[in-house]
Amino acid sequence: MQEKKTGIFGFPKGYPTVLGTEFAERFSYYGMKAILLYYMVATVGKGGLGFDNTTAVAVVSMYGALIYMSAVIGGWLADRIFGTGKIIIIGGFFILAGHVVLALPIGASALFVSLALLILGTGMLKPNVSTFVGQSLDNEKDYDYVFSFFYVAINVASFISPFMVGYLQNHYGYHYGFGLAAIVMGIGLFVFMIGRATSLKHVKTPAPNPIKPEERGRVIGAIVAGLVVVAAFFGITANIKSGSFALFNNGQFNSALMANVVAFLAIAISVAYFVRISGSKLVTKVERRKVLAFIPIWLAGVSMWAVQEGAGSVGASFIEKANLHVGFFDLQKVWLQSVNPFVVMILTTIMGLIYKKYEDKLPNLFSRYALGLLIVAASYFLLMPAAAQGHGFSAMWVFGSVALTAVGEVLISPVTYGVTNRLAPKSFESQMMSLWLLSNSVAQSINAVTAPLFISNANLYFMIFAIIPMIFAVILFIFRKPLLNLVEN
Image (cartoon, rainbow, N blue to C red; front, side):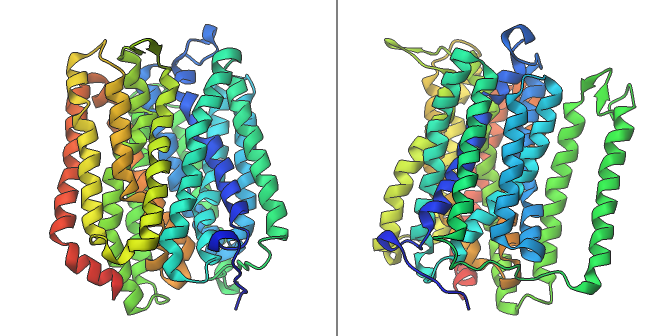
């Protein structure tokens, strides 16, 4: 049994190192994403790539979807081969390479190579950092407290990165902004490697369900088959010059086709994961019941993330139609990406203290989820008057909407990291965290598919995406007691 130790303020020993690693990864992710859409739509003469708005919104959404979809790979590699500690380092190197490539001024080819590296690297690192924190805890009751402050570190990075990256982009160019993301990720990776050998050496993270010798041939065959299918897909479609089923039409990227492919994969993988985990012989009856209780939590996450993650794609595009002059002050559109983390880190800090002191007196977990979803829904209803106006509306409508979404997010996302750890079967710890991250992937893939609707009728888009979380809120509230029984018993 591994040794567990406690550090400052009752946090696990080495906790600051893990926070620093997650801080660096989220800084690089949100800093890059804050300027990604503007880089894509800016003309070549202004240092951009000259993509149209529909394609840019779809690509940014697909990037986010594939980031969280790749968490499946990271979770599997941790559970079956490397363990969480090693896979975090491997993923960190992929992320660093991705940011370095994007910092080089070599055009659209660098963009897609960079995104591929970032997708793979983040998929390896992100779910396993969260699992690593859980593995370092002695007391299960500390999950909500520890993970709430873990969430604060994420949002501190998310808050400051758009300002810093945006400043460099505005004064020196897009690639300088991307370069800062690379530098911060490099520092974070170095800190984790040093910390793992010192303050974190007591945390042993072997693969909980390692591949058996008799499984190796089947696993290698599946990996090769998957690579062949992917290569065949891109190879065949890249050579088709016309038609709606071509990935490239006359040299132009077919974002609609790719968005549908990504959405299908995200949903199919999610369903397969639920079936695989709940049906495994390694899962006990009690664990299986908890996996089933996770389904409505996961669906609530999809409806919440579809709105929350829209700030980086839909919101970034929508605010370009707004009047950025407020009173005597001119807002910068890139600052929009800092609103959510600013609200979240303040409210999550407060909620973390509340969980520590008043957890037994708080409303039912699913009641809190329902309230959070209603607030998220309200944030998109708030945008409908601005969308009806079309152009020239105050940017404060968009800033206010993102802030309201953050309030709802605080009631759902931070505690779900801890809930996911508690509900995860022992043999599927990292993969269960990957499944939670897949809710984000499904949400952003839906955003990618519906990008044309947003461009053509933003008012209808906001109405639809406000109604969906409202429906889930009602369902969770009605069934809150039986769902809680499944979680706690």
